Length: 224
Image 1: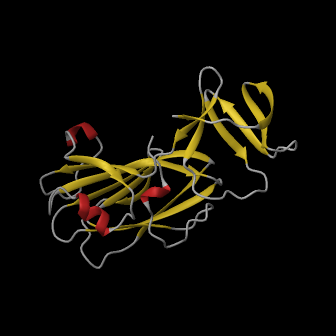
Image 2: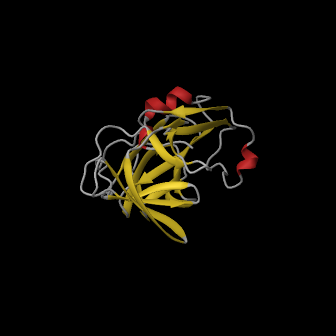
């Protein structure tokens, strides 16, 4: 973790948890800071524009120091090499046993990414997991077009159900969920029975300006 020095004007009030107005090099701060159980969150960002790519989250140490925590972008993946199966049971993850391989995906969620980690030509399962940071409360739609099956869970809620063998021509299956501003756990699941391997996850309509129809990229998420 990296400590940072902030020249800021901060005003606190306490009611259950702590809020602060914080400004850098200004006596008229615009961003509201929410400090709750050791987590620092900017509840509002004023009228400014975030420039560049976020590299760190803010955290609070026990002594009250504000620190920078590296933002680990990407999705964690696990693979399981299984017997060729239609609609394998993933309800009890313990029955899957120890994963065949693990790692971090930092690319588009498409055929190339899948083929790079597939443990076999046929008969396997892949799970990608991470955190989606929602900037604007609203309804998020995601799309899946896979051969064979796929599922998407957000906060353990099933959003896309496409868990079946899918011979060509492939159909796009969509799902929507309303999410509040903040962090949300997301899981993408894929299984291959036999034959052609194909995977594509794309964005549908959403309030966070992800381009509709664009391929979902693992670096749009982060791993804790």
